[in-house]
Length: 111
Image (cartoon, rainbow, N blue to C red):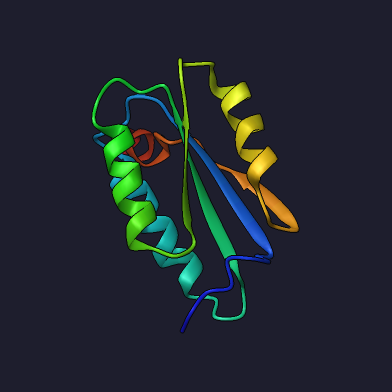
């Protein structure tokens, strides 16, 4: 099934800064969760906020792998609030949700 990336209902905006250890896990888990609901069209906007590690390359790989994943690269690092705003500006969804790029790592650290 091809996902309608031109008119998604939901845009997920996730800023990442030096998150090479979690970026793939966060994005894959989001894909799994949101793919369960077959009628929901959605996009994931991965905002690289000036990372100096391999985060930019990992984000590009994910964007190339999945039609509804989009990469946005910012330079230099401008901070989480500004990175979220940049993601909002390119979001196509009727609704926008945000998530921290390190949320999975923080969750597992507390377990």
